[in-house]
Length: 374
Image 1: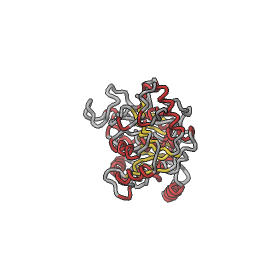
Image 2 (image 1 turned 90 degrees about the vertical axis):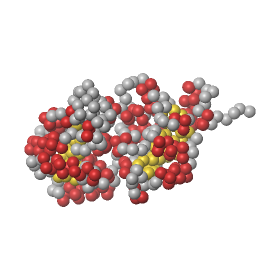
Image 3 (image 1 turned 180 degrees about the vertical axis):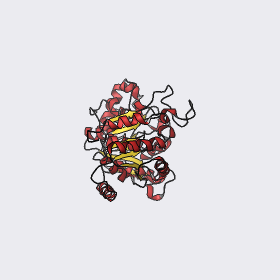
Image 4 (image 1 turned 135 degrees about the horizontal axis):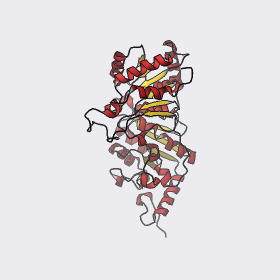
């Protein structure tokens, strides 16, 4: 009597080709799959191409996504997603999603046969274990790699390339298993109709319903990625004078001080909106004539929404994080210390990579998107 082979064994007695074949077979039989993608807005958006590729490969598979609650709306209406599971971020309130313990119970209750962890941190590892899934997929570089019984090799080895984008890194599962990958996996965002209506009403109330507008989102998670407020103020003044288009600055509520500082530096009257829900911000981005921002989640949202955009780039790795599959201009310097982790500027003390970008260069990049009406 032959011995049954379980996913937990990782099939050590078989050659790699047979193990991959067996894993492909297991995934083909999966009815409900959990994708874990914690952390930031940008990371969440850049996971969308993988979800779309999996859905295209197995349309009948129910794909659930576990995300931090603030970013659940990025997946809510996506046709590739069956259910969005939301866990509250550290310090969040009960209205911000499940607690970790509740999330573990909810994951276990759904009896997933397979889980793919795209994050690899300790919290996502906990959720992977809590699932009880027979097939637990992660990357070899993850901490606590013993949790996984299917470990994806180094993505650069799998792709046989060094210049990988984050989207390609997350598509490594499909490349490794020789599963179909769309030629240009897009990663789309789908808007809430209520958010569309709220933004249309707000634009109309501000007298911006007809002419169109430019949108600037000037904040980033690190100062080494955030162009100075005085530079954004000068850019907005010059753009408004050049094109006579109204300019809206947006930010999260906790970043409102950045908009106040820009307003103090600006000579022209612009709009400063720091009170938008994420759904509403997405609708505002979708309607803009041009989006301008740093390496940030809203910049990746603009790319996913197909908006032309100008990215003012600082310390982060451009090859890994550049806007994905959209029309864009990137303005960045070429310093020998770039890229870097960006928490501090070890080379100069102050982040010259972002602070020294001239307004003229960003303005030139913006004007290349404008037609003769400007």
